[in-house]
Image 1 (cartoon, rainbow, N blue to C red):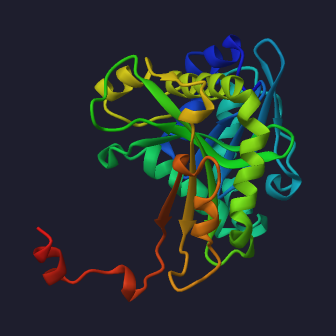
Image 2: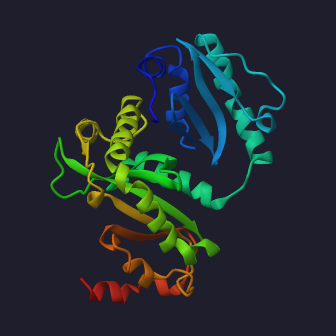
Length: 288
């Protein structure tokens, strides 16, 4: 199960690893994700750092050789070793730009995380908890999160876990996304309670580490949220990034025939522009 030990959380929050956590919070291009007692920090979808606990208060640094430039990083054991690694982050980022995998779909995943978790003025209804989440034997969701509707928000609220799939442009897999979601649904429906528990744990640990940039009153309420274990309360979000509205790849009719169709939402996003997606000022005014 994905979570960090309490000693790991303490070191990241108040101990000698705090400098690393602060570096992530201050750099909106970095994304920290919690794994099974280790963490990854991503930059442009590439792993900048894998940090795992080898002993109490001792952590092994793993950086891909292409990004490390041949440098061997010492284990993180104190403020000095952490300070040294943090000082090398700009160098590792530069190497990722030169040698990393370039995928707009992966970069958009990280932008979605930033827009919903780190931009408090957006006041989003969805918060991203994890990326590349493995559920069951065949289910790997691009993003997982929680739906917290703006209407009647309150402390202790029971909220819906969300499993999200991101598709960029005219990805040929779009034509089969209804089959993909059905496979994923079947893979997780018997384990929905365990999945909800795991997502909630990661959510609470990230809150503890200050990885949601939100107003204090909102954060206080978020700490009390409870995640529904009921598969019928889950939401399945299909995020279509820069999807050409004239394309026939997406079969909405086949999505609507799925047994859990009422739980599926399709969200269109991105920066590619088509006139069909615009409204004139007169149309907007007439609708008021």
